[in-house]
Length: 207
Image (cartoon, helix red, strand yellow):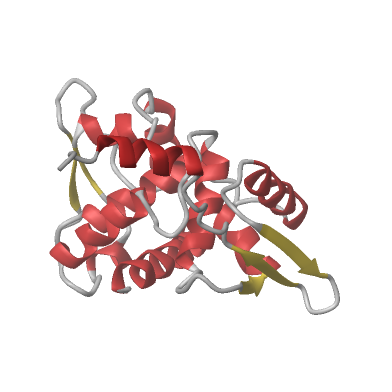
């Protein structure tokens, strides 16, 4: 899926363009801004998008990205928010804006994983794994890569993966400390229960 590839590429870029201490919530916001910007670096952020990302009260996140020299602060009195990115590399993006906007939408619901309705750190970790999961089979990546994209240390990233398993966002994961490779399995789709099947049967029209 090209949207998955585009999100993975942008997460990788932001992993080097933003300071290492940038918060997960600011990284999620920067991803949406980068994918939604036009050729001049201008971005319009609807209020509904921030609500959907659970970042409605996000003033400190804009300050965080502005202090990093990545964007100009928007006028918080105007809706939708309008701002300009200062990162010159973002202006030379390919493919076109419509394809990048599709990637931005995919990042909000990155199938086959479901972003947990929890802390931004967990949602960013799930998005990073989804962008590295092209199929429903087992997947792997280097721990250093995952930690950099998640904006955490390897130990903290391992704790996030444990929490994703606890919330059933992931099926399982393991870390080979010799090769530093992390492998993970997506949760198996649950078969409908007998009760659900009976419920659907009862709703079928009778002859």
